[in-house]
Image (cartoon, rainbow, N blue to C red; front, side, top):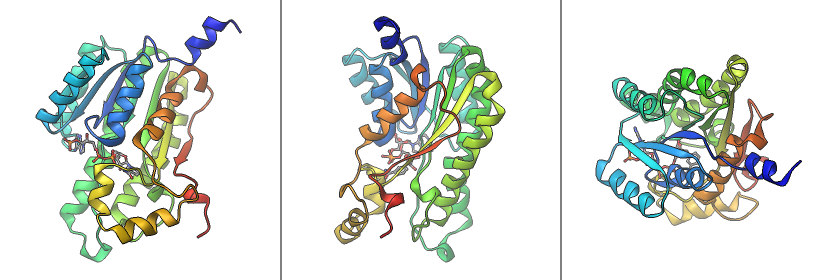
Length: 261
Ligand code: NDP
């Protein structure tokens, strides 16, 4: 293989991407990773001031990133977001990263109907519907790639996370279905299941030092992950070098799910 051809296979140049929830944590790292590797990126979040601050930072870094205010739990707002994406990328999207998500830590018997609807609409329904709407754009690119950000809670049972785990387990299964259903449309679908990653979401759920120490004691690498360690795999899965990887759920967790502790 010629050297220049190899460089192209390990790059995201000429690609367009939508990353949901790009102002903080894992999504923020993914936006930067994709844009630095050559993609033109659109992102969204609910907080306009934070979004504008991030967009300014990325412009200062010469990264090609645009953004919309969007609450992905709202069907109407998702439709507006996809219309914007269709318009700025002229009907062709190469990469969809379904990252935006949230959690509530509660024993199952304390969960309310509102908790259930909030987590299902934010984590699962949004990813399903955005994938549906992105399908024609991804197909039109001729080399589409969807990455869901699920969680190791989708494959293991953690105390107080029953609704969250159900949303993430469903994303794992959705990955397999879309990987089979849309492969003929040149769309690959994969999923990343992170373990504990140091973000504001994790801090809000594990604000007690003892709980964090317990969490870390069960990770063979002996530490939490960083958002960049999820972003690097996300970028890899979207590159031409990953062209035969489809329908996979890959844990980025320091070895947590294989540790019998
Ligand atoms: P953060 O809370 O740090 O960041 C979440 C991002 O998503 C923010 O930009 C937030 O902006 C945005 N967001 C949240 N809700 C919505 C919404 N309804 N509509 C649009 N944007 C939204 O979370 P993480 O980076 O930790 O998590 C990212 C993903 O990774 C989630 O799906 C999470 O479940 C998953 N994950 C995280 C793990 C961890 O340990 N951190 C482990 C496993 C999975 P704003 O609030 O302004 O809308």
